[in-house]
Length: 335
Image 1 (cartoon, rainbow, N blue to C red):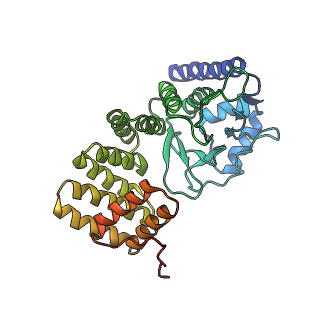
Image 2: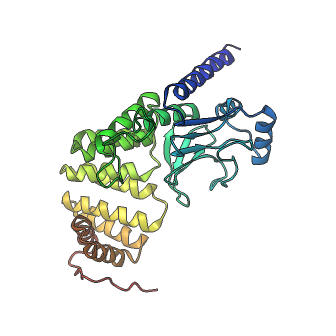
Image 3: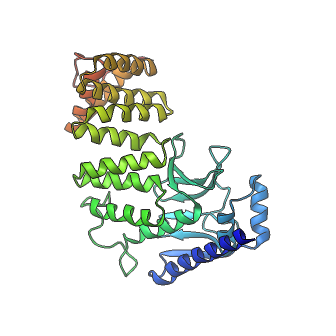
C-alpha cells in the first residue's frame, strides 16, 4: 500500500509539472487533448495485444495525446481528437510500443521495461532517449522550449546561418537541461558530447561520450564518437576499443565493416601491427566490397568538394588496403 501511495504522489507531481508548462509557455506551444476515457485506454491496450505501461496509460487518462512545439514531437492518443493515434505506426520490434514521432522522422517506442527508445524507421539501432515515459516527457519539454521565444516563435540565433542546425551553445544547453530531468537518458548525454565537440571542448566531449556508453552500451554511435574524439586527441589506445565496440553494436554488416576500418586506423596510429592485420581481415570479411565502397565515398566527396570527407575515406582506405590508388571518378561496383 505504501508503494502505491508513493507512486500516486509521483504521478501527481509529474502532471503538475506538465500542466505548469502548458500554462507557462506561449499559447499553442504545447497542445494537449483532454484525457481519454478509461474504456478507450483499455480498448487501445486490447488492440495492441498487451497492457500499456502504467505511466503512459496514466498520461492518456489525463491527456489524450499531445502536440509539442508545433509538431516537433507528436505523442499518440487513443481517441478521435488525438493528434496522432496509437497503433498508426506498426512497431518494428515485437516488444516495443511506438507512441511518438518527431518532425524529423525519428520514432519513440516504449520497451518492455518502460524505457523510451529512439530510432530511425527501418534502422536496427536504438538510442536510450528516456529512462521512463515521465522523465522523457519532462526532459523533452525542457529541451525544446529553449528554442522558442516569448512570442511562441523560434528565438533569434538558435540556428546556424543556413537554418539547418541548432548552434552548439544552444544544443549544449538543451542537452544539459534534459539531463537535469532525466540523468539516465544516454541519448541526451550523447547530444551533450556532440555539442561539446563542436565547441572544440574535446576532453569534455570524451567524458560525455563515455557517460553515454555507460548508460546504454547497445547504441554504436556514442562508441563511434568516443573513438573518433579519442583519435583526434592523439589517444589511439583509447580509440581502438571504442571502435571495436561500435562495430560489435552495429547490426548492418556494411556499417560494422566501416567501423572496423576505423578500428584498424586506430591500430595503425597505435603501431599495433598484429591488431592492424586482424582488423583488416575482419573488416573485409564483413563487407567484401569495403574497398570499393570507400573508393566511392572518396570520389563522391571529391565531387562535392568536401575535403574533410575525402581525407577521412582515404585514411580508412590506407588503414584497410594500404597503397590503393584513389581515382577522382566513381568506380563501378560489381553486381
